[in-house]
Image (tube, rainbow, N blue to C red; front, side, top):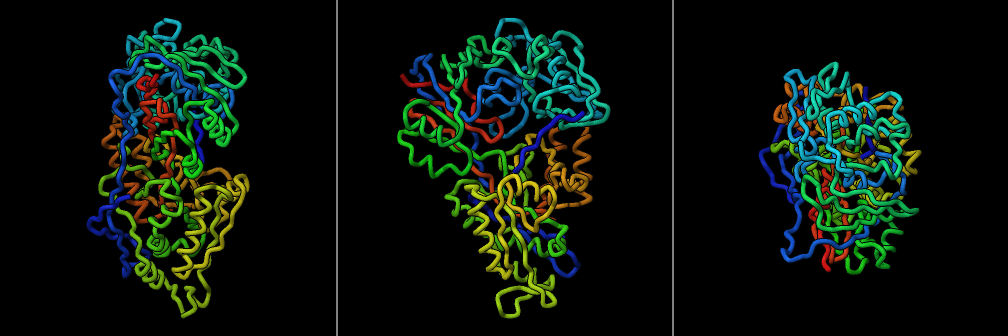
Length: 541
């Protein structure tokens, strides 16, 4: 059974040897220049050794005090509750947490986790395999009444082999479950099996994490450090999570001295620069901005046209238009990601090459600045979300750059609901979109041919490539889910998404963690989130 929720969506570049690209006929051979993007790892700044222990911190977040799992503020989820595995902040790879080791069977149908003996619940009770099994069964139940975020795939059963060993069996190979189930928040058995689960009461906020739940008021949640935390006790004693309606309210509260730190979404850079006494830590967000092609549009079904539209965009100008609030990408993946291929090609800005490709496809300018075939101009419709601080300015610049190519673009800006409806119905030529990247290399929801069902599938552009479908299938059943094998398959997929492009991959927008100068240890991560290292944070007196 599958339980998952996919949220809707992508510098210095070193040139390498050119790479041939498949085309619609044997005479044209467009080329792409191989490049690699730079990546800054998420690491904590070394702290002074003489800082005292203790202190308090007030963190502002957008949301409410709902205690439903998967809905409560991320900082509460991530600090009160742990998972079997955690995510490496720099690479996105899986590393031990509540499970200190795991194995996957050669046929990729069985995952066995060995729990660490020193893990304790906040009430002092030991973590057991029964707790883990009850949590998995509760989230995977067909009667689960909460917000689904976990992809359980073809889960057959979960069982406790002994007090410290959990075995999960699938009816068929399913490697993505290692990431999905491995990062599931684990609760005590009595709480996971309670009638109100997954909406918890304050008394049920018992985890194994770095912080303990203390209280909940109308607009805030109070946490305290877990002095017995197996991964190292936090230095700061008291953590108050204050809830706000929107980013403007957060900024105002910071300016008024009511909070010490807050997170800011991509596109908020200009407003943050106006804050006084702010220490701003930036990191790439785990999402991409991409310009999707709808290959149901006859013009875009010709790969030479899609190559031309890639060559015609000056990504550096696009990045400058949004004040550098992103990092340029060469794929549907972040640089630094553990499965990112090292020899990936990427289109360079080459307007002459773009015009040549259009001419080879039969689209030529007869002197009026617009390319035509059989007297009909190449006109495209570009949809994106109105008032989005990144997407809207990018859309206007893309329209301008395509006009320079001789391709008129009609720009359509819609509200989010209407725009997403159009996306699901595949009613566009070009779609400028932000997409969240999954932690697992499995991106078939976006690119596999059987995910293009209008009205439900996330393959909005009707992309279809038989080798890509095959590599996705192989990745699901890789022997023992070996990371090396899955990374190799992911690399083949990403290379093909360049040479047979379903999109122009543009950039990963930046996110921000804002704090006062007295708050030390900030290290936001694209993969592990903003608060993965709270046990390392400190505050100056």
